[in-house]
Length: 195
Image 1 (tube, rainbow, N blue to C red):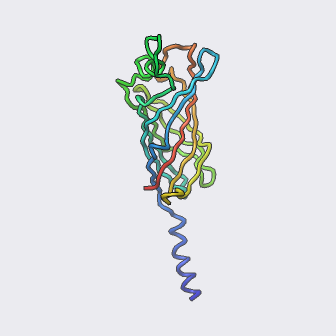
Image 2 (image 1 turned 60 degrees about the vertical axis):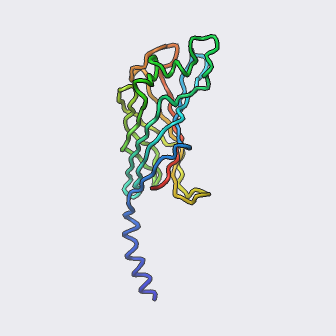
């Protein structure tokens, strides 16, 4: 009996060591991107995008991964939707041609296949951000990473928090410079379910 058990274990070990890549679909209810920008040198203004979709692949054994996230720019909100006595609200202005130009560019995307690991955990993902028709390099530092079964559905999931930075002028978004900052801090909270 011991020989049979050891034989089965020996056969299973190579399979465990060469685990297949795992694919995950981002949960649109628990994944969103937001940003911070300096306003007049006085305060940081925050905004977020409420609609996104995407997927990621993780191969822990091979230390490889890939990520694709699409963000609907019209889902932008900064909490300022009432124009009051102004010609437009801040959200209307940000969605217009001076900034995100959502009519012409309804989506921005980030695609990456260069992932750095620390052990089995990804710690950085580098790729390209496409915004306003321009594509530029972007690296996101993964500041929190957790994989576990969802406590209610029991589905395997992974997620966490990531951040990076861009200069908006590099994408052609130059309105208001330098009073409204050029340096944009990006944050992404994400959760994905294994397919």
